[in-house]
Length: 506
Picture 1 (spheres, helix red, strand yellow):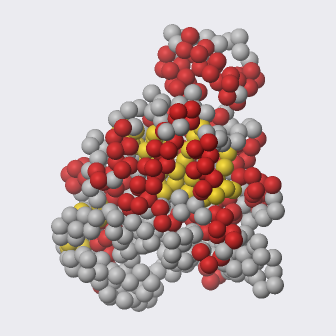
Picture 2 (cartoon, one colour; picture 1 turned 90 degrees about the horizontal axis):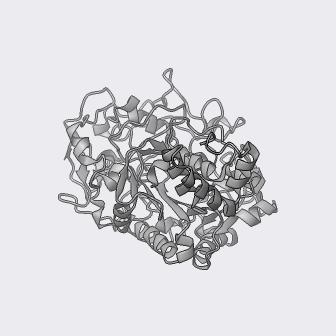
């Protein structure tokens, strides 16, 4: 391409890419010179037409849990043909799966969930079919989805310890016929990525960081009470009274939010409101109590926010019920229609977005503002949207169908704005697997991940139509795509072997 366009200097190319107006000229020039490099020219022209990237970040579903039955995808047929039986702690395959344990809080309770048979065969099973018959508009209990447990569940790619390392027993092996979900139809129309992996092992807290900075937060001064205890092999140490077999109950572990060398891998609370930690008595009402050990210190790593701002690209993080949570602490982690999840608001952990800063007022916005910007055609160039808890599909406090329908409605809203639809790429994905089993081994990565597969759908007039994209991606691929489109400075944590999503486009 550079030989064909040798009259352009490096600096001129950068300026053209950064200008939304000149991107169209650049795309036309690439098409004119297609004989020199047809594949690159076609790819660049398609991506260059995108003026808005929208990332919709749902919650806690593995690929197999929702899309195991999707036509053409690497799903349940392959899983069963190559099934590695779930194994107990000693490596012995279960004769039948353990019960679904009912008590999420008291792991020593042996109470079982009567919704599920006491014994199920050692294989994946339909949650929405006999003998369970629980459709996707009925919520299930939550499942453990934490850093160390997830690493053990994957078990070097065998994926055979999901049951043994869960607090939910057989539930981890459940999946749905997703064909009744509205987003299934959207996936059939556009591109479903069936080889997209969550950025980091474990839960929502860490994976939100990997979405925006491809990094793991630090807490070097964490008190011992919240630090995980590792054994000689780097796994979580077992409590003395932990059951020898998962058939006898959930494993009991010496878990913590922070690794022994000071990295925060499980949920801690933002240092700023809205936070699960109240302000200190008589202290600044905009802050979480600085004396609470579960308050993560303000973070300072470089994020996609920095690289977008440096390039003059407009962006915002939109969160359902953000304004309400700021005004009323009672809606935070409360089992009501709001149930605001403070640990999903990743930029609220960063010093640059502290209360009183211009960055906070400009970039951290309410979900209603997102919907209004869609209708008005005034979305920023990059928009992250975090649905409110009732609509994010998280097990334990909501069902699948409500959130799936909401996301489909958001997409329809964008498509109904002709100007916006003609220049947008929408990436719908899930932060992590929520503890549910998936049969595909994650690709090689680093200490932090990637973890299991999650569903990802690319919706755009420029996306491949009716396609299943088998390219290897992870959450950092979203950062790669944004960086490529807007010619940003690459973030150092983005994985070299993760695709950049361009294979999902025509």
